[in-house]
Image (tube, rainbow, N blue to C red; front, side):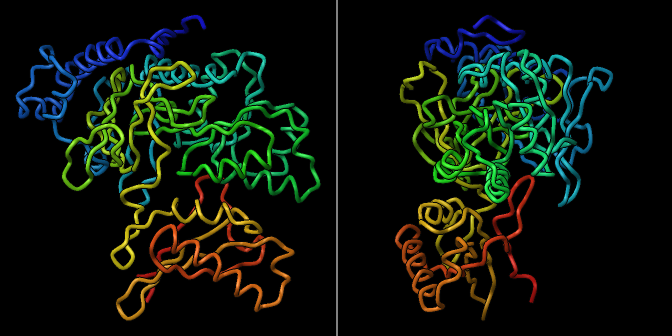
Amino acid sequence: MKKIGFLDAEISTASRDKIAAVQLENLKKTLWHCYNNNSFYKKRIDEAGLNPGKLKDLRDIEKLPFTSKDELRENYPFGLFCTPLSEVIRVHASSGTTGNPTVVGYTREDLEMWADNLIRIMYDVGVRKEDVVQVSHGFGLFTGGFGFQYAAEKLGALVIPVSAGNTERQLKIMADFKSTVLVCTPSYTLHIAEVGAKTGMDLSKLNLKYGFLGGEPWTKSMRFEIESRINMKAFNSYGLSEVIGPGVSCECLVQNGLHINEDHFFTEVIDPDTGKTLPAGSKGELVFTSLTKKAFPVIRYRTKDVSYLMDEKCSCGKTFVKMAIPMGRTDDMLIIRGVNVFPSQIEEVIFKIKDLEPHYLIVITQENYMDKIEVWVEVSENIFQEKIMILEDFEKLIENKLYSAIGIRIKVSLKEPQTIARSEGKAKRVWDRRQEN
């Protein structure tokens, strides 16, 4: 692959010493940039006693405090920008449903870098200029669709920015335009497959080859479900607006961990309670420092995503470290009777059980000051028509499997097909009803 823009095609297979050297040099530049252009970061760097130009080791970054989403909101809208607004040509933002949104900005250089990271991800699994890329993320302040659109265009592929929704139209476009790449959330991908099967479409005859699916946590079991319904390779794509958007990391053809674009993003895993940096292989909270962003760099940003780093050699040839598929978020973690429960643990179990549909909802209630957890899950049409006694036995079977995997009794309620709400974007997996009484 030739060099495209900011993309160094050789670095992803370089030695670990070379990668570390590139990271250290980029970290120095980023800290100097933040120090000289933002009072918030200047104060933090001064208080840590760091001289950005004299960093000797990447571990020196641990002297700096973390940056949180709350601090991003407190500096709303442009307080953490490190370039003049005259140099910012695009902003994205979170929904802001719990207060001020987090606003992120991009210079033209940032947008080029963002696209190049996604080109690397797509090219490495086989996407070429001859491909047809259907972008089915919602377009707006959400970053999901824009990064892939610009990257695919820059690569030379034909792009269909169809956005989310109108699922039957999505399927018609896939068939008529012969889409080969789908960019989407995994839950909406399953919904597309479900609607296609319902309308009688033979999904195996679609031209789809690759799916870059992200925007929400999902499991290997969901991947199996997607790939068995749609004949394509489904890759877990990871990113978050505060760091860049999609493009931070993605699976390779091996589909065992997500390679981080380490020349642009420095990654730590910390103990979420103590803040201590953990070694590779230890599960904890992901923390990212951007190494090449100009308008909105972040230093030690706490993502609240739970994962671990995998530093073993990958058979694809890349030497970039991998992160495990995120298994949940520290703020999504449910504590039920003293047991930590992630929605992804429940999903992993129910997706392996025959005759269950891949649509579920975790319902949390409270009775006599005690938290209770229940899982609503759809069953196939033929199972739902069975006698009540048989359904009750099936519920008990699922409850026992959940108990074996998680160690806590979870009530299961089987639901008729099509009764759990579908989502065109991020799926809602937890309904917390504890404050309703």
